[in-house]
Every structure is written in C-alpha cells, then in structure tokens.
Length: 107
Image 1 (cartoon, rainbow, N blue to C red):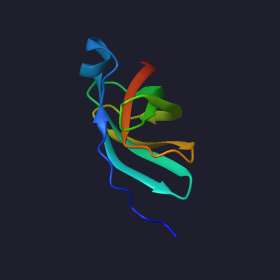
Image 2: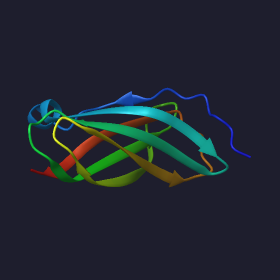
Image 3: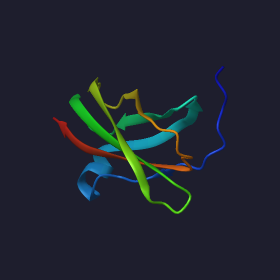
Image 4: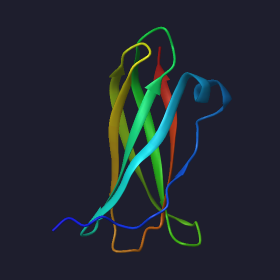
C-alpha cells in the first residue's frame, strides 16, 4: 500500500554556474514501506541539449543528519526543456528531508 509521507523537502543547487544552467526542484517526496523516494524535475536553461545529468539526494533525519544518499542519472534534457528523475533509498529510519543537487552534466 502506497502512502504519501508528510515530509519537508529542501533543495540545493550544484554551484553557481550549474544552478543557472540547470534548475532542480523536488516535485514529490514519498515513502512506500522502507523505500523513500524523491522525484526531481530538472529544467535545462541552456540553448543546447545536455546529457548525463547526475543528481544526488541526501535523505536526512529530523536533526538534518544524513541517513543515506540516493543517486539518479537523467540521460538527456533538450534545450530549454525539462525531465524528471527519481532518487531512492531503502531505510527503516524516519526520513524528514531530502537535499538534492545536480553534481555533474555534459554539454
């Protein structure tokens, strides 16, 4: 049974240059059993396609200490387009936040 979890999602960007090139938002943050997931929307602000967009999401406790990191790779995003990705972890701990950032991409 899937249930929506009540969480807050914090969003980080991957440095000044990349933050202007690719925007990241956490669209959905949920828990299904012991699987915690963050669905991210990546918006390409460039006039060219980007590929191999690497995303790291740190899943945090109430005290904002990291439990684990989920990773996602989005294969390509068209110029001025957007794409979705999903980073997940498996944990029995109570996750309260997800801090996600773009760590790298190819132009």
